[in-house]
Amino acid sequence: MNKIQVITSINHEEVEFLCEPQETLLDVLRDTLGRTGTKEGCATGDCGACSVLVDDRLVCSCLVLAAETGGREITTIEGIATEEGLHPIQQKFLDHAALQCGVCTPGLIIATKSLLDRHPDPDETTIRYWLAGNLCRCTGYDKIVRAVQDVARDLAGPA
Image (cartoon, rainbow, N blue to C red; front, side):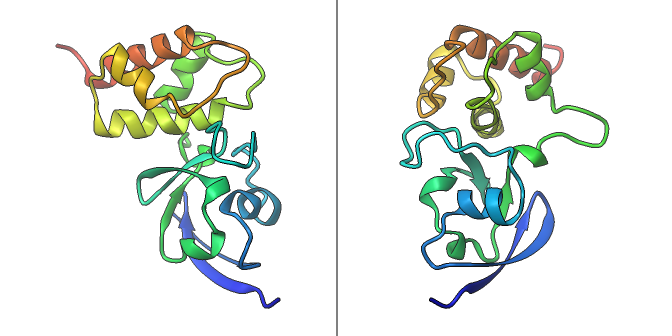
């Protein structure tokens, strides 16, 4: 089978790669490009561990064909932090111990960013609804929800 050339942007950096027509974005990110922050949990779109943003839309990268990403802007967990340090979402997950084994954490952080970009002041129901596509088998969800509430308050600034 002939490989497909794809030119896209990952974390604001132009990237070019070759892929098989059936290869998923997850496989290309991890195996071809060495960006292993995005995790594989189920490979069926049920757990959210592989969540990334494609043109600011939250998607499971295991369900997206890499060949379809040409000309798109992809944001992975590696693109969240800055040279100055962790993104506030990442820091609040640490502060609230909202992680354990780490498999779900990148997907939850990406989903949280997507949520807060659209709903900067979410209530608890909105947070739980928005993160419902992300399974955590270790931590449970209360610490995660508290971390999201805390970072939303911080990003909103003084009232």
